[in-house]
Image 1: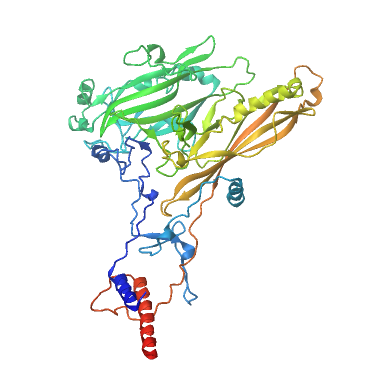
Image 2: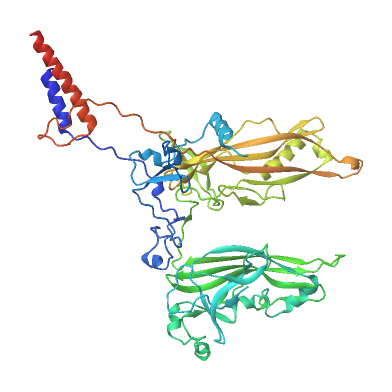
Length: 619
């Protein structure tokens, strides 16, 4: 390269502006975190794109904290203080120190944790992170023609017009599980609670025969109506009970609570033929006491309220009811109180009859929500012989679950959903006789099969979603459950069987995205199996016939946080630049290129100048 070419190259470096680097990765922390249902408006979620302006008008204040995008937050170990004579006091929130400007954006993000796929990675993470009744109460505010909004009272009117109050129902007390009738139903506020009723045997008949008892279905649906639209209060005088009573049956702004279906027993299906609109439910409206059997029937056990709404107007209020029977035990020697467990749930349904796919986070998992599972399916094109991998989700059983506790192992064992972030222990048992425990290899295999069917119901093709909003159309966003190598189980050993009785599922997750808005992502899962030798243990009763023993198995779910925060490190020392003015070409050019471009050109010019001087000296 000639000297002239070198000078021209330097000038080109100065005149050409460098292309700015742009961030191409999607910033997952910018998602609408409260949008937990795809294609349906989530209540009180202002950023949900499925919500209309009418929906947002009845929401409360936004429940998503708006964070100034100019603010950058770092771990407090990045804050350096000097050894001054003045006392230094640190006051940080959530262990973060926030700046208005930071020229090192990487410090504000969690370090990327790769998906776990090898045994060494699993072991490394384990070693590093693992540790092992309806009532109408006085309103809390004065009724007015103000539209219903999220969290506002729902008003009700008694039939005689004597009281305008708020809608409430049974539920637990403030400091106990005992059922009381002061649990208010607030607009667009969904909840599910459990309470219990304890009644002495001597009071069963009295409580069952009480016409005002909270056990009677009739008291849940009659004697009052719900105010559908608060415009009702602009049409009547609240102090004139006669006026309210006169419009009780004719006002279009009042609606009765109706029964949608009834479960005759807790184990039966909800019969939609038994409804208060087209069906005959008169046989179930009141509790009945049978003196001959000391039995109280038609007790309301569980109630699910379904409130249909549109904007700030209530369309319908329906209830699904479960009934139960309580009886005295004639064989009891001493009097024991009777206990009735009751479940109450309140749901709000949009009148548009929206349907959507439930999410467990958007994008990161939210603690306590379900984990979506699927099955890997590999198909081969008969023409091109190319394979395609996809994930299929069974919408009838979409979530990761384990066996319910205290159940007999085997096909049909009931299950409970695994909740993200909650370590869980459950199990079941198998009852065996002395003969089939020490009989043969086939007998041991049969026992092992029954244990496995009850404890581990997941096939090897099952995968888990990495995020709460993972799409089944993206198979790369799902992780498989890696099994560990175990000794042969279900085998016949001296005097008994070698059985796998403990299954442990370890789910590794990490926070990703910005430190100010961490998003939980599942990065791996592993199944561990533990086995032991079992022989029949009957103690002093070994001489008896037909003796049995229980072999207990358990399944454990353990969540391990493998998040990697930013490291407390500073940037490298910048390179030393030549001591040449940055306005060397002024006034021809004014600050058109970054410093490192100037530095390169200045070096090149310095070398060129020296070469010219050296060349001159030789000549």
